[in-house]
Amino acid sequence: MVGSAIVRRLQDAGCKQLILKARNELDLTRQSDVDAFMKAEKPDYVILAAARVGGILANNTYPAQFIYDNTMIAANVIDASHRNDVSRLLFLGSSCIYPQLAKQPMAESSLLTGKLEPTNEPYAIAKISGIKLCESYNRQHSTDFRSIMPTNLYGINDNFDLKTSHVLPALIRKFHEAKINDDANVEIWGSGNPRREFLHVDDLADACLFVLTIPLDSYRKHTEPMMSHFNVGTGMDVTIHELAEIINDIVDFRGTLTFNDDYPDGAPRKLLDINQLANLGWKARINLRQGIVSTYEWFKENCDPGE
Image (cartoon, rainbow, N blue to C red; front, side, top):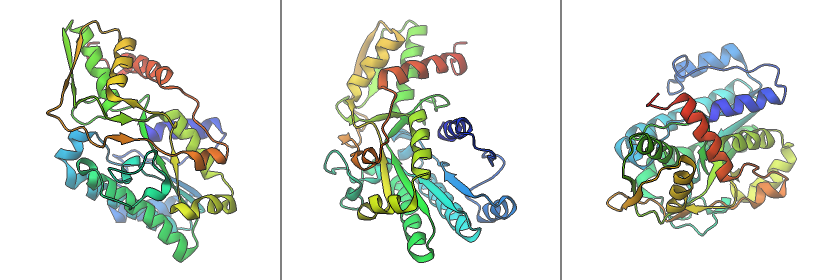
């Protein structure tokens, strides 16, 4: 989802040469493979959007894979970028890097100020390592490696698998299948009370290009007090219950909704402080309902299991 959106944005911007590899062509968890790729291609810029991702269920089920794969991906790509003289690198993290009970909205300075949310701690630790790798290579080797922390993402090419997806695409699939099957009820995991912020992946891609092209002096001026990264979000959140109601309305499911609080809620709230990036002139453009409508249309055309 993220990589394809960034490619579309770079193509729109007139990028002359994109060096792309699918996951079945290049295993970023293998240092030798990454080294060989970097030596052969010698990229000028690197955008590190690759990651093993998933929702609460996937994080709880596969914690070793989440921490290992994401740590190795970050370490291999960042180190190889330094050794092959990459001019500028952009590392994509996640808002789960912030403490479970961080002050809301969460500022960049909240990093490492408290305990992480337990259900996705392995993934968060791997992403924190990526930030610190970028920061440390900049300090020791004077590289220009940058980091951004997106909020919860959604959009076309999302993962709609109910076992491994995040909440928004999972709800789209649940409501759609319930409508097709004429079910009377849709069960939603958790209490519905946690608040979440959602960013369309096309807005993230735009933010990636924006941050990647900020002059180095300006980037350092705005990030040094906040550990060298920018939050990327909309500055607005909704409860999971409100999100479900929006998706229910868009899909036009006519049954009832129930919330199963036997499943964990995760953090009570995750809203990013986006002032630092806003002060530089960037803001999201796609509102939540508009983004869900386009995502649902793409899902029906490409992923509808009933088709």
